[in-house]
Image 1 (cartoon, rainbow over the protein chains, first blue to last red):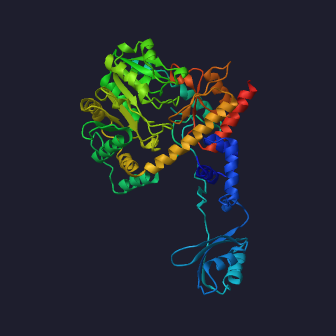
Image 2 (image 1 turned 60 degrees about the horizontal axis):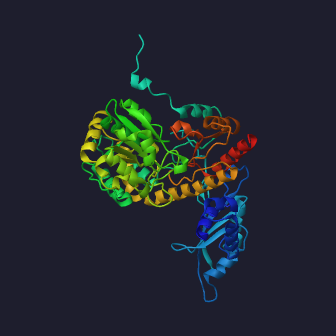
Length: 161
Length: 385
């Protein structure tokens, strides 16, 4: 067993109780609880969230993937720019990536206007940012490893040999 | 005028599973633990290979024994995984599911009046297969005290020394029992001593959770008297693609092919393309599915112990086999928990002698459903305790 196994199970479903995980592994409840506490304390597990299919809600939720290009100078590195951007609550994810642009940023808001305004008023003016390309999310098919939509019907016979 | 059915067909009673299926279909809140097939989809690479073969118009018959390329992949796979050496030219036949392979073997090797000993509890199709072939069934019960393994004592007590064929299935449906090499040695000796042909259904071989699967055909003097069945339904989650195979000496496989070429002609071509890919590149998918089953197995076993039902420590397949509480027959319990709690399970007695007093629980279903189903079983036990 390993912390890895506990982690895999938590990633599969963070609502598994310590008892559930203990039942699935060679550990007892106490050992699972200790392992989870340790993973949390070490900052490996950073939080627990629901995976939401926003299309199923009446309320509009607008999300965008934003490509950012930056120019660095002697005093400013990637980490400095990232720290500044990550503070905004509208930014849900921020990653430095290889390829045609530097940062990949996920932004959420209640309307297209709100998201656009955030990018034009808060992100674009950052001096080191030279270009932003915004892609609004139209439909999400999979989030955090979970397929969204209604394709989960089990058409197997209810009883079979 | 009425159509008169053959004696053989009339001799086979309706499946004991059918009744539970019909009750389960009456309501829409049933969680089924009665399903003997994976809840995973066929690995994508295999599905893709099937799609590509269709796009390329590969829809004609294949060689009767199956595509040569597939037989070569099967030969490499069984050699690598189970230490079984078979020549793809003459010693392997690809069939429409392992079930067809079993049927071919009964028809090829059982004469009217021949006796077929079947280790029970067992997969429900063996017995009708024997009857359709004109043979007689000799049940050989296995017991929980022996961890549902077949023993020489059990064979002797049942009178299997006089049988012509012995059918074994390990890892076992419905008990989840496995047999290790040391358990198989005396059975092999018994088979050699009494000149039994052995049919070894190893469809669940990949789903062995503790240690490695051993095929009885690898034991001394057994290769020439054993037909091994396997297929893609369970480990590769390809039930609906209907693809299995049999391994055996050239003359035996040739005899099975004689029936196959006049009835099935060849196994589904699209499925054969999927199967080649499944063997060549889907090993990781299989490992991931097996890991998931193992976790569910441990979960289910642990919950049954908490509920207070005696449960045998299943080490293979995707079933476990708990005992029903005192005061119930297996059928009463299964019907009660289905009607009152909406959980479908299969009573163990439909799998033959040795199954009475048990339930077959399939954990080929997601953990959320397993958790809910076991909570409902717990409530049923509490209500009737």
